[in-house]
Amino acid sequence: MSERHLAIKVVMMPRDTNPHGTIFGGVLLSYIDQAGAVGAYHEIRRLGHGDQSIVTVGMKSVEFHRPVFIGDVVSFWTRQMRVGRSSITMHVEVEAERDGQTEKLTEAEVTYVVVEQKGQERRPVPLFQSGEVD
Image (tube, helix red, strand yellow):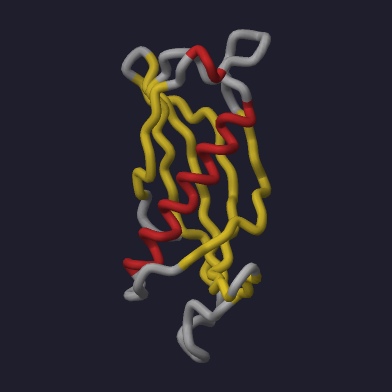
């Protein structure tokens, strides 16, 4: 895996709470998807490719380790896991600093595919030419 990249940092607000007073999991999933895309764009550029259009094709291994509270400043760190011919898979770790210590709150694996759009259709396109990726 590549080095960690701080994709986004967000303050959790009261509007994002569930009936239990913690941050709703769906809000975190949305931020995870956004952070994963930011990280994927970062990795694609780092690998020497220009801007590419990507779409989310899968999110798996989502684990909620600890609750997220109103006022938490939450960091979404990404790391490249795999690069395929037209896809990139990112690991996203969600952390907050509490009482001077970093706590891992959530983590997930998100896969994106590079696409081109023609009219209303999007279709996968190679990120790499043949022979560039194992």
